[in-house]
Length: 289
Image (cartoon, rainbow, N blue to C red; front, top):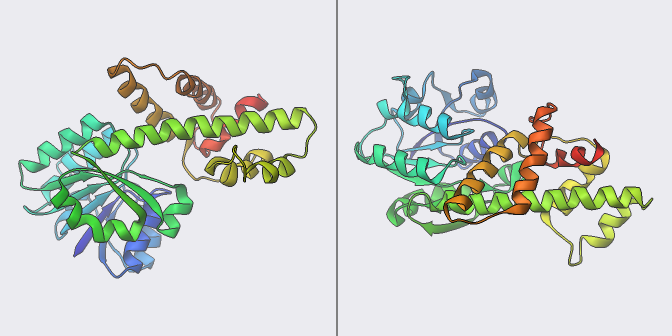
């Protein structure tokens, strides 16, 4: 298969590199051209536009920041160089972005008019999982499209789960981000309490991570919180965008999410203080302030 990839952020770049390492031919595009350099050095071709990237592709994968970026990359409005101008009938789009379920369904319908398949396949597992190829991939879409995509998804992910029609992968990702919000905030809060009590926080983490309080966030992000240093795993600003999707989905079901609403407010305060480009674990700074 000839592949195209659009969106080379902290998660997208290692995912694309893993496909190159697996032997797939790859053409890449990113709106910030300099981010293509690692892929080009690894053997990928670089295209000047989404349409050019998609022109020879059997499958196009995208991993962009939000709904507007996904629509611009795929449908091109108002830019006529969107991928849809280069996609051929029978091509498959695998959308690894985290966007609203309604946007995924709208993109799928627009591409279907051109006989192009689409699945939503957002991922979770951070930069660690992206580099290791062990991401959890949450899929919504036709089962036949998933089976076409599966060899590619098995390169980038360690677990692939099909939730149903287009949009359901995004709904599962919204649930994931609610859990991330609660678990990161709980770790930050607990470590602040440990510090105020005069406990050795590293010792506390080691003692607790194997018990009932253990979590991915405690295992992988507590050290950053203790050191007040937040190398990027997943950007705080993007997580706040994702919480907006989750809160909107909950509101549509007449469901209140009080913990998520509180974390969203905390993240709003951190964004206002200029911390949006840090990792989500920078939630710990809310307690410091």
